[in-house]
Image (cartoon, rainbow, N blue to C red; front, side, top):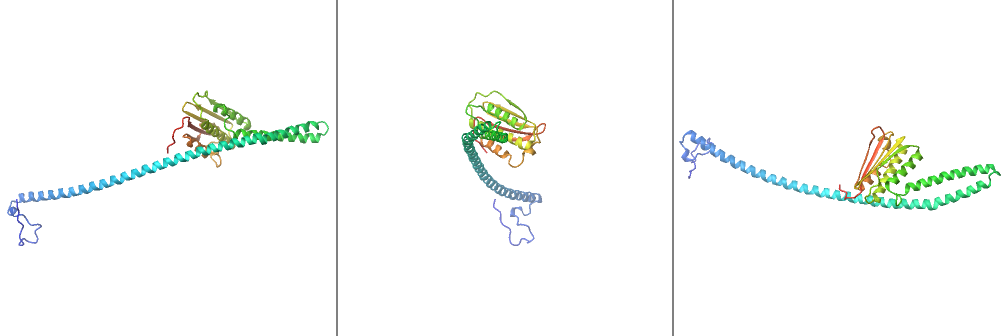
Length: 300
């Protein structure tokens, strides 16, 4: 249907020119027509806004996808960096163990041999002056006693530097070390461990557990003020869990600088394990480290 436009004689106050067919139409028809035009205009406006909203939504989705991709790249980079750091820690631990073994060998073969030779000479001199020169004999007796103490100290240092001896299981090495520690520091101890597992041994991981035991007991001796220490070793085909608990002053007593807590945690995490330090049920401190015996890639 073709509509003619209104002429210029239309009053200026009119809101809009009316189509010619509507002039003189009933008010109801005019109202319906106006509502229809308003509805069409509203629909066009809503359609335009809907398209604009769709465009903004697509833009936001693209931006979100880009941010997710960037976040994934960052996570991959962090995982790679964490794996590199763990590998470096493992290599450092291997180098450290080799250096400890070398120092222990030198102390045993060189210094230990010379100290033993010196003790034999002093003992011979002591026997030679017995009954003839009491003053010299007493001085030689004191020198031999001091030398014996030095020899024991060297042996203790060598034992602490050496890793688990070839052919010795982690269970046996831990029990021996705990017994020596208890005798040296005058502490009671309890050692609980099952039978040695039949699964293939992993000397590297067992060495980490043994070093954690040494460091934990050293912290007990220096900081805990304990009277009893309990060590539990649980080994399965897939995991080894070492727990060291004392009845001392609690984690605050072993939390000072230089206690090796960070070092133990780094060792455990570098080999894919977990480390925890918590208060004991009846006071004291509980150190727990678990390591997988079948090493898996370490993820961030």
